[in-house]
Length: 294
Image (cartoon, rainbow, N blue to C red; front, side):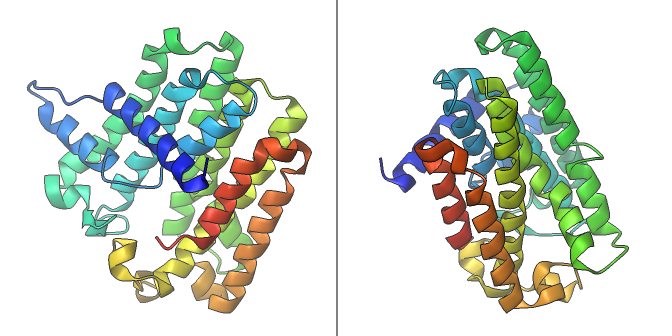
């Protein structure tokens, strides 16, 4: 199957399950469901669930077993975007070509929608234990990875280091994005491999792949903020420079950032050598993210 066709099929599977796990409810708190679903179904590449599904499928073909975790990680990612866009943080009006959550529902409901998605992520796993045909110890380990990656030593910690920049150098920048962007990407691969039954060596190699893929993903985002078509990107460009944010481009320039992007991508792909053809889709994902335009 051609890569884009395959990728779109995985996205459709993810969105089908997201709709099942987070239905719209007609009750007194229905506004929170509307707000949560507004952002959850506002588009996006669904890279984290796709990575989790594919790493799981490398070791276990019962894909339905990993779907609660795959949807949970997308819910956590979406909650982080809602909160990142708030006036107290990045103060963005548009994301993916649509008004940000707080612009539609107000700051208070946007905060609660983010909180709701974080909580719903863990509800989704725990409420669907019966569909997860994975040994209990692997479920617990996967929950540990998920919670750690989204906490203060993961994604939240990365956001803090981005908001309160203490140093303007490459080491600080990599540390920040290893947490802010990379933690959930790494968690996606580690959970997929762990739940699928990979060996410790295989999990380690997939963790290396995800580490460099996460950094490459962020470098590409930084480059796109300077070079992308605004309509295609779905939000205003040039905001990083305008706000004096620490990014690969503001620190190193476009040319050096492109070199680093290619280096990270090469390192990600090199980490997959032990898997041979089994990891071909993961290589294609790395190439797709390298060349993306939004």
